[in-house]
Amino acid sequence: MHLYFVSRWILFFFLYSFMGWVWESCYVSVKERRLVNRGFMHGPFLPLYGSGAVMVLLCTMGVRDHIILVFALGMTGATALEFITGVVMESIFHVKYWDYSKQKLNLKGYICPAASLCWGCFSVLMVFVVHPPVESAVLMLPDHMAAGTAGVLTAGAAADFIFSFREALDMKQLLAQAEKTREQLRRLQDKLHQVTDGMAVLNKVRTEKRTDRKPSGRAAYLEKIRAVRRARAQLLEELSSKVEAAVKENLPLKLNGGAAEKWKQELSEIKENVSREFQKMNERSDRSYLHIVQMLRRNPTAVSGKFKETLDELKKIINGKQ
Image (cartoon, rainbow, N blue to C red; front, side, top):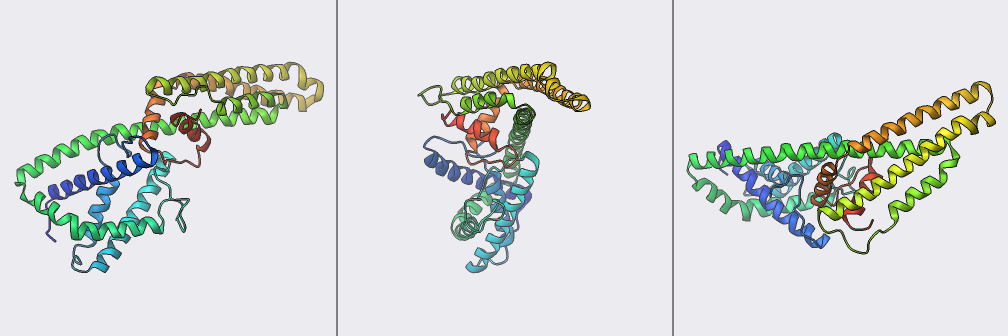
């Protein structure tokens, strides 16, 4: 195994990132029965595969003639990288972009034995079959051409990553706001039994089919998203009115003295929170929702423990189930 210049390592990274993108996009497209541009980024690269390949090359640099060591070291290094990447991404975005929770003996859904074995097989295949011709092709490039190509690819990927990173942060913020809206509605339900019927209306809106056709393009997604937002806004108006009525009429009849004042104050605070939710809802632009749709279409297996209900709702819209 040669010692490479930095530009060669960068080229290896992008080549294997591209190969990983081709594999994942084909696999997920067949599974989802639609074309999927797989990955966190927009471009045809999956950095996890590129990073995994570089990790395997580094871990097996001195043992490339020993197939068992290549398997074991490659599997260990790539699995560790996958675990660290998964933990970091979820800690930043509160979303898992891949999830092995349904696999046996998984570790918090980030890694599992089956995936690790695949990394081991990938390591053997790469070191003994794929990398030799790739290595030869990359080493044939003149130094200035390799450096220039690596620079262009790095600049383009960096711009793509920054844009995708901002999209992911926007998705996190929107999901957080939507989940907060849900929590406010739940709090209001707990405080005021009269709104039970209103919550049932919301559940009906979430599960009800509005069209027999599957969504086709931006306009279809936006129409479904706007319908959900209109329904939620209508419900907020109803709940706000009921809180107002409870403060003015119902509670003073049922409670006495300080208890009545305490509940009136709590309900007034909730009413103010509902007003703030109206403002936040209006701040969520169609562009923000479309960015989330694009991100979820590229990552159909994405899950979130913190934003589960909202994420599931958006995935239903994408899949034409709402």
